[in-house]
Each structure stands twice: as structure tokens, then as C-alpha cells.
Length: 207
Image (cartoon, rainbow, N blue to C red; front, side, top):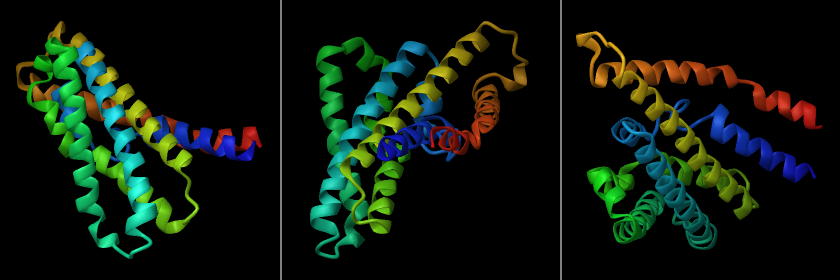
């Protein structure tokens, strides 16, 4: 029961309280580039969730059974980038075959998931967990990955919804385009700061 509570708190913390985009400010490029329409934002969120889940799974396996036992931690960045790039290729081929309109809408941003630092950040979080505790389990790593993807999806959909509303609003000329998008992103990040400490409150409540 205690382990389930820990996993639940990890999921809530990663997805909402310590949201990768709005708390750590990683993954900003697709967050701003593919958040003009809600449908595109949802598709990108699903793609990132899939890629981060596959990347974290493979990263945990490779780190646990190859890098750490053979003291090859210096190669972790290269290995993780290769894993992420391979996962993105799978997603790109799938979307291009089964969802051509969505593939065209993504444009260059789909292959650029490879350089989405939020995914690399999640892999490095797993490395940090394994370095601190060699018994850091695969289930914990996958909860972290899925929660990170869900958190990214929540953030980009909220941003897309706000930007759709802004497109129909009278925005001052000086703030049109990237300016108003960055201001909205900053306000959204401030709003998510209101969740700070919720994980500690939930922990106390569930104990």
C-alpha cells in the first residue's frame, strides 16, 4: 500500500506540481511551436508521451544492465540520445502512415521531438534515481515517464486552448505573435505554482 501511495504521489508531482514544461521549463520548443490548435497539441502530446515512455523504458534497461555494471556511465548522454532518436523514428513512421493530415500539420516539429529536452530530462531523472538507489524499479521509472508525458500534454493543450481564444481577441500590435504567446506561457507557469506543496498535503492525508 505504501508503495502505491509513493507511485501516486510521484505521478501527481511529475504531471502537475513539478510539470516539466511549466516548472523546469524544458520542452519549450514544441510547447510554443505546436500549440496553435488543440487538435495538433493533443497529437503532439500523445507522440511525446509515447516517445518518453519508450525512451525511459530502454534507458532504464540499458543503464541497469549495461552502463552501471560496466562503469560506462560516461556514455549515458550518447546512449539516451540514440534511444530517443530511434523512438521518434517509430512515431514518425506510424503517424505518416496512419494519420497523414496530422503528419503534415506537425511539419518539422515531429522529427524535432528528438531534440525535445523534456524527454532527455526524463531519462536523466531515471539515471539520477538509479545512481541514488540501485533498486530504483522499472515500475517507478515508467510511472515517471507516463506522468511526464501526461504533464506535457496537459500543458500544451491548455496553451493551445488559450492561444485559440487569443486569436479571436483584440491583441495590441506590439504583442502579436510570439510576444503574447510567451506572456501567456509565463502566466500559465505562475498559475501552476499554486500547486506547490500539494504533494506534501496529499502525503499527509494518505498516511
